Amino acid sequence: MNLENARVLENKEVKPNFRKLKLYSPKVAAEAKAGQFLMIKPTVVNDPFLGRPMAIYDSDKTLGIIEILFMIKGRGTKLLAEVKVDDALPVIAPLGNGFKITETDKNVVCIAGGVGMAPIYSLIKELHNKDISNNIIVGARTEAMLLGLDKLADLCMAVDIYTDDGSFGSKGLATMGLENILKEQKIDRVYCCGSMIMMKNVAKITALYGIPCQVSLEERMGCGIGICMGCVCGHKKEDGSHGLARVCYEGPVFDAEEVIWHE
Amino acid sequence: MNKPNLAVEFAGIKMKNPVMTASGTCGYGRELNRIFPLERLGGISVKGTTLEPRLGNNMPRIAETPAGLLNCVGLQNPGAVKVTQKELPWVVQHDLAVIVNIAGGAVEDYGKVAAMVSNVQGVAALEVNISCPNVSAGGMAHGAKPETAAAVVKEVRQNTNLPMIVKLSPNVTNIVEIAKAVEKAGADAVSLINTLLGMEIDIESRSPLLGNKVGGLSGPAVHPVAVRMVWQVAQAVKIPIIGMGGIMTAEDALQFMMAGATAIAIGSGTMVDPMTPIKVIEGLEEWLIKEGIADIKQIIGAALPGKL
Figure (cartoon, chains in turn red, orange):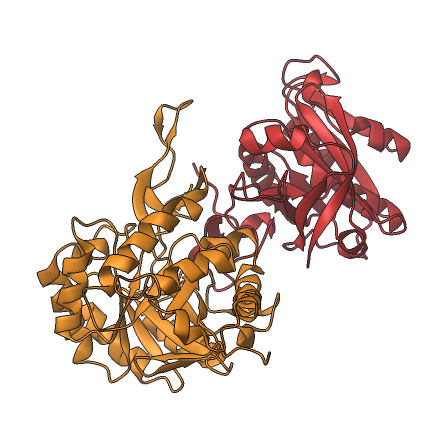
C-alpha cells in the first residue's frame, strides 16, 4: 500500500456523466491487482474531507499508469471531474483484496454492470494474459451507460451486451445472458461487479448451478483502510455463523456465498 | 539545539510523545501497524469494548459533512472475551501506552469489562466511554448527568487498579459539571471530546441518511468546540486532560495543549490520511525547535488565565 500524490495525465469524458482519469502513480501501478481499489481526493486540501473509493480500472506497470472510471454523482465526483492535467491528487492504494484467479480454470464468465466495469476490466485483462477462456457479459440500463466497450474492443474480446431498454445489444438483464451460458457451457467460475441487485441475482443463479462466484461490493466508505468500521456487509463465516465484514479490508471482493444479501 | 523532549507522564501513564490515536479510529492497531510502526505513537486507545459482542448499527454508517464526518458505527466489537484473549495480547507487545476504551449498557457491565481488561498484562489504562452517541442503551446517557457519570466511574474504580480516564460527551449543558463529578468519583484523567450529535438528511429520499438516523460529528468542524471545552475543564479540575477533536496538524494539537491538555488524540484525521498522527508528532518537534522550547510540558496550559 502506498500514500502518494498521483499526477493527472488525462481527464476524459467517456459517456455523458461518466469520466475516466489517467494517473501517473508508478508505485500503485506496480502493485495493483485486479479488483483492488484506491482512495482518492480531488485536492490536497481536506475538502472534501474524505477520500472516495474507486476501483482500479486499468494499470500499466511499465508506464507507471493507473486509470479510474467513475460516474459524476455527488460533490466528490463532481470535483474529481474538474481536475486538470498535472494536478496532484492524494491517493492511498492499492487497497483491499482483489479477485482470486484459479490458474487451473479453463472457462469463466465475467459480468459487469454499468460502472462495475472498472474492476471487471482489470480482471478481464489478467484472465486474458493467463489464457483463461472468458465469456464477457456487459449490462447497463441504457446505451449511454455502457462502459468499457472501447477497451474490450482493443483486447479483441467478444462481448455479450444487454440493456434494460434495448437501446444497444439484447433487451433485458445481464443475468439472462449468464443463464444461457450456464445452460450451454461448462463454466468453472463466475465473476461479477454491478448493482447490488445484479450481484445478488448472479449469486442466486450461480448457487443454483453450483458454480463458484466472486462479487466485488461497493459501499460508502470512511477510511478505506479498515480502521473505522464504516463499510461493513453481512457476512457468513467459515463456521457458518453470521457476522460482519469490512468491505474495504476483508473485501471488496467476496465469494458470493459468504455475502448475506439484503432482501 | 538538542532534540526537544516530547515525553509526557500523567495519571501514571507514560508516553514517549503526547500523541495518541482515538478510540474507534484505529481498531486494535493491526491495520495501522502495516502503515507505520505502532511504536511511533505515544499511545493508542483501542476500539470501544463491551461485555457482549456488538454488531453495531445498520449501514450507512458514514456521512461526509463540511470539514468533517458523521458516523453511527455503534460500537461494533467482538466483546470483552475475544478482545482480552485475541486483540489486547497482540497490541500490548508494542512499546506504546495501550489504553482500552470500555463501554457498557448497564453500570455493572462497565465493572465486569474493567475487571476483565485489568487482568491483561501490559495495559496502561482504561478509558471509560460514557459518551458514545450511537448506542441506545447506555453510552451517552451515562455521561449526560453528573450523578449517572459518577455512578459508572465508581463502579469501574471498584473493579480496577489501572489508571482510569473518563471520556466525556460534548452533548451536555455543562461539561465542566460532568468533569468535576467524575473527578470527585475517582477518575484519574478525563478525555474530551467525544463526537457531537448530528444528522444528515438525504434530500432525494427525504429521510435521514444514516442507518441510525443520528450520528456523531467529528473532524475539523468540531475543533474549536473541543478546544473551548478543554480550556474550560482545565480550569475546573486538577486531573490531567487528553484533548481531542478535529486535529489534523501539529498546530491543531498545540491549541489543545495550550488549553490545558497533557496529551492529545487523533481520530478522523487518521481516517483521512493514516500518516496524520506521525505528521503531528514530527510537527510538534519542529515547532518546539523553532520556538527554542526544550520540553513540550512547558506549553501545557499556556493559554489558561494567569499563565501569560
